[in-house]
Amino acid sequence: WRYRSRTGPADRSTWTASYAPILQCSWRDLCGGDNCQPFDDGGELGIQVRGKRQEAMGKNKTPVTPATRMLKQANIEFTPHLYPYEERGGTSVSARELQVEEHHVIKTLVMEDENGIPLLVLMHGDREVSTKALARAINVKTVSPCSADTAQKHTGYKVGGTSPFATRKPLPVYMEKTIQGLQIIYINGGKRGFLVGLSPQVVIDLLAPALVDVGIKPS
Image (cartoon, rainbow, N blue to C red; front, side):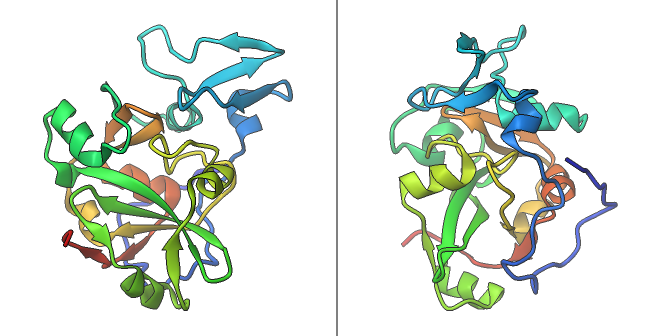
């Protein structure tokens, strides 16, 4: 994979879904060999090497996922945050458990346009995505959420543990523009019940997201 640093955020709201992220890497790159592959563990992401399951935790009890591998390989500083995962609990649960504002917890949404082309949307936990506004912003007819199975197929992560980092294949990323104004954000680290705290500038530098204004308050 390749990494290009940026000195600061830029307005990329005119980008379309045809733009791919700057950082591109595969599961093989992050796992380190042909015999290493992710496996479905009910959302508890581990690594299977030569047929033997390795415990997906580092010596410091930080889960080892493709996302954390990518962050470490890019020399990114982040803080790991584990919490009891609740099915369909969403960002309200993670914010409560971490005792942070839900506005600072960023959800990673897997969506697709009318042609089935997938994309990622990064949104504040206490906001929803106006799909009509997003479709206008990226110049497509419609945008809708992917099914859980389709989302996992595109990202390699189970719903509830979807990270924007090190997805199975490169996906265009759209980020609500107000996220860049936060000092620190909490975003999924590639496992259910696991967030990483980092600067939003990291997301901008690694993923080169197009900045959009499509967030609305829940009805």
